[in-house]
Image 1 (spheres, rainbow, N blue to C red):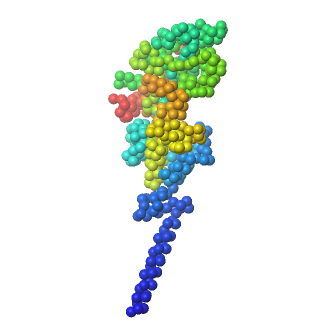
Image 2: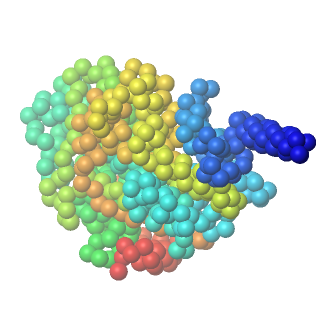
Length: 513
């Protein structure tokens, strides 16, 4: 009897020791980085018993415009810590060439940021991207941040193949030399006729008081009629597609373009334009702005109010004072100084089809997209680490003297950023001008929703358009031949087909009846 009891006791003790050893050894089932690879009942999938996430490697390819990530990449560290995502960003200056090579080798990265809608849509139609439609509900923070447009702009053939990042703010206006107006006793021009008279005075009446005939009214660049954009907007013309009174209007068929060209020719005939306007590059005409030879320019706030720009024109002309011309009051369809592409985006983020077929990766990608769309994550990719690079008082962000260390964070703005608030925080000194230019009235255009027509060489089309418009403005072609110009676009570049395709696309998007 005692022998049986001793044997039973010994057996129980052995079993307890085995169970204890098994329990201790279970925590060592990892992949070499301390992260659990199993799915025990005590924790959710992808975590260990201590609720630590298994680290998932993700590669993203994008064009960073030459910017590089620092060795001390605190965002990469934070994403790994918070989400269990080891995100490697591969910069490619020749993005589409490299992507096409990788696509041919069936080796696309997990995530891709496309710069243009056409490239994004091409890859979607080739079946290279994952369909994110089933994940829309899970991407709730992305939805809150971007609204439906984040998905509708990235919809191809009825399926969501990515996310359209928040669009940049269009922040251009006509800027004018206030000190020249004051010197000549002129008021801010309120109409196009008054604008003409101001440009004439800036050219003929020695506005800088140096006794020399060395000034002119308007400078800029000719391409796309860029220097004349507020004039076009005043007439109601906007490149390329707008919806007016429920109808789609193509820029090159718009009678308002013809009227705008007549006014531009009036300026050219009066010789109030920079003589080199047709050939100017951006740097060339800004040199003229800063040196004091031009009185008006169509420009962004960045070129007119940043400290280094102010220093440049104040060094040449200590009394120089630039300010914004409000919308002209004699507008045709409504006050506007510019056109804004409401279908635009600062990029398209997509998931490769291979990554989309991996549930574990897709779960982390959803987490990643949501994280950089709100709260701590969104602030981090804009400003850096709280308490280090910025401080937070309620919703107010204040940058610290270490904010320069976070100059690379824009690379991680996968969903974009709230542009006006971001810029006003980054450039607090220029916040007034940022808000004024961002809030200026603009004609909505819909190009961002549209795809280029197959079989058309758009480089040749753009060159032809620029050459012909230049002839109209400088009197080398009679403006009464405008309809023949439009017909040439139809004959040579399938303009009618492009318009019909655009109508169909916008109807599918619910933007046109």
